[in-house]
Each structure stands twice: as C-alpha cells, then as structure tokens.
Length: 67
Image 1: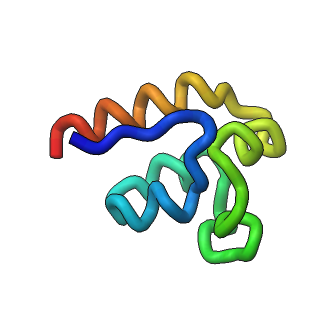
Image 2: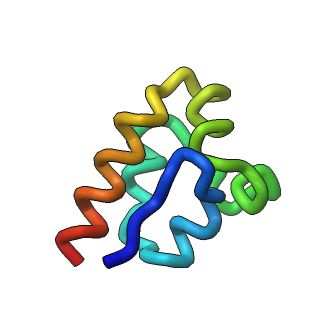
C-alpha cells in the first residue's frame, strides 16, 4: 500500500495515482501541471492555499489505501 506525508511532492503523488488529482483540485490547487507542483510538497502547497495539510494527507492516504 502506498502512502504520502506532508513532505511528499505533489507531482510524486500524481505519479503514484492520477486519481488523486481531484483532491487537489477541490481545494483550489488548479496548477497541477505548473512547475510549482513539480517541486512543491503537500505542506508547502497547502500553506499557500490556506488548507490543512494534515487533513489533505489523511484524505489522500484513505483513498490510496482503498486502491
């Protein structure tokens, strides 16, 4: 089973499972293809978008656990 942490780079999450994209889109992270997503961690992106990183990580890991 794959899992992510707040330090996981967004692009690595998307490479792990493209089905994770909607989780980012629904909280306002619409720049998934931009250079920032290639090198930005979940925590960094959440800080920029005013989102709780722990909550997003929990949702992503729940989704990935069901895969």
